[in-house]
Length: 171
Image 1 (spheres, rainbow, N blue to C red):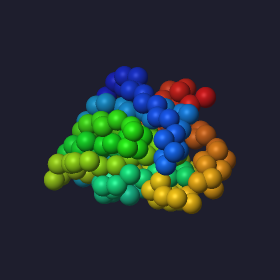
Image 2: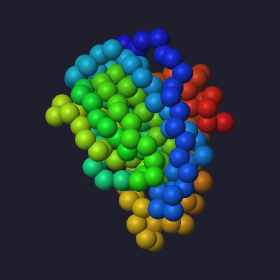
Image 3: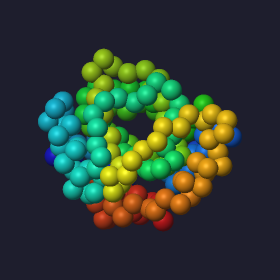
Image 4: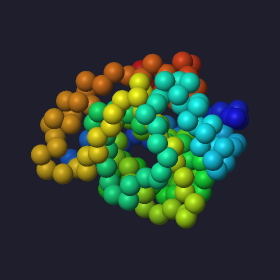
């Protein structure tokens, strides 16, 4: 079950030459839900699916800078904590904890710097899109930039649905 949701923290990252990042802000909902462990993971999967963010998985975050050019992504933290580097090498380190939800625009770099042994994440994608994993290597762009520019905006926020969240902030 989710709590009263405050406005998300918003992070903006500029293209650093390797990681394209995005004009849309990354959204971080703090303490967005109360269930933890397997119950929290199930709640996230159901909440995301109810808002048409599917093709979900449970795992962690890769320990290297990467981004997606074929989809936006949501990460729901259902156990533990981690320090994530967001926006590539020139970006910002941010601590996330169980109960947090991170909405990552296509192109925004993310990497797990360090995490607790029980760090658990549910990830999902709008309309169940398939994801790619790009690492800011030579030759990835400009094709990745073209794919990112062609992506439609999601019709729903993975947490809040058709009102609020990215629906309001990604116009």
